[in-house]
Image 1 (spheres, rainbow, N blue to C red):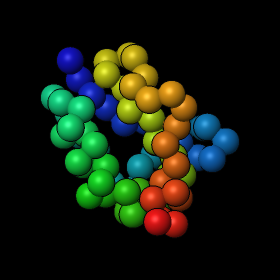
Image 2: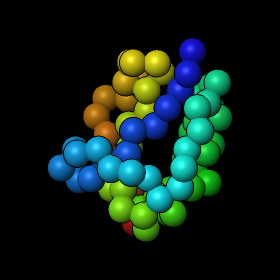
Image 3: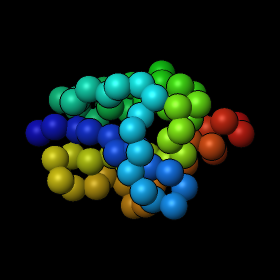
Image 4: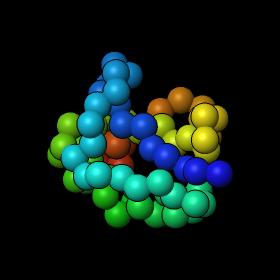
Length: 71
């Protein structure tokens, strides 16, 4: 199993991340990485992310990086 992030603009189009991700072996590792890099991803032009386990989306709908910035 591989856990990967998809980086998107607000309209859902795929965008290149400002920080190059890796392929993760666990969901926890993927989520920890996002917690460490979300600001750089937002500054690099990503507005939202989706987490996939292989080809299956883990969360329903995208997770906004802007919401984290507002907390």
